Length: 261
DNA sequence: AAGTTACTCAACCGCTATGTA
DNA sequence: TTACATAGCGGTTGAGTAACT
Image (tube, rainbow, N blue to C red; front, side):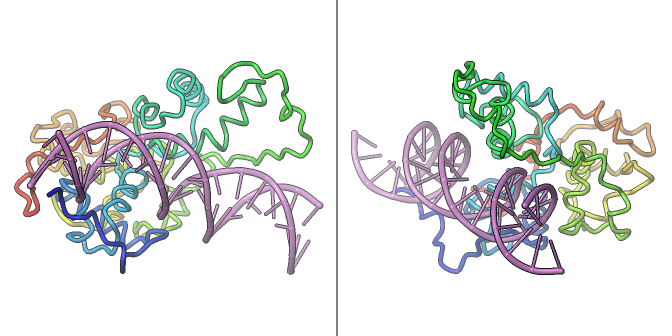
């Protein structure tokens, strides 16, 4: 009756993910899609449980993640949605493209809560507070925020291989957007992720022809709007690529994978 | 320079909802 | 209908790091 247990935890690795594990998981998912998280680590050659893989993918590896700091507009939207939905982070996250529930939850707990208290609002009720103790707390320290734009491109290694250091560096909003599109190409062939990027000054580009063919491979439809250009700038990605999340049905044509259940 | 404190966020835990045999 | 597996969600923790003393 029922199903097999999800996973026994004996011998499974825990803690921070290594770059190699990230590559293994990302390559596997982008090549095969996901039909059952339980067997993903087994087939991807990872000593992790499916739950851990799922979390890593959703919160970190998923190619459509936006990354970077939240804008004021995003913070305002979070506050608005929180006042309506409460701590239903996944519901709130569904209103944002490229943001995870975990990311929004963390941001809420570390930044927005304080911001609201400074404004004299109770984060729980969104009502004005009578006892605004935090507003005048002399011990409160506000950590300066480093903006994404202040990170320099020359910190990205010439060989293009994503290391632990560069992983965060390329994750400004625009860069992450580009990475999202780049990573889709992994569906067609197993390649080193870093080799996908072509750095030109402060612009990253990818061959549109390779993108188009690979995109159509994934989605089953032509992305003709990309065919006219030799390269696509970050700005073009922003304008042209409006699909918020990479839907799993993009992998529908890969359904004949050996682990289809 | 070294120790301490504060902060961030990735990852885990435990629970619930949903699906399946 | 029941029992159980699985996916997903929200709360919490703790390692790493930056800022401060």
